[in-house]
Image (cartoon, rainbow, N blue to C red; front, side, top):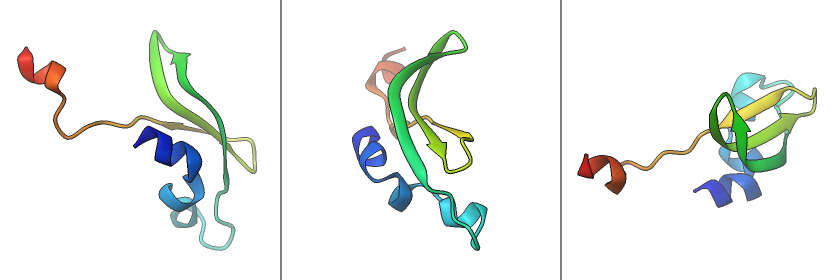
Length: 67
């Protein structure tokens, strides 16, 4: 999923829902970005240079299911 969002952010992130008259367009910056003591899955900037942080999750994570 991360790869698809990185490749097609304008189709998969809700830029038009934020502002229908001027939809947000997203520029992929990097993945697995260190932030706040952890890692952020994806980092984008919009046309106003506002960062958009994306964290993707699986419905079932086998690592969590073991604990």
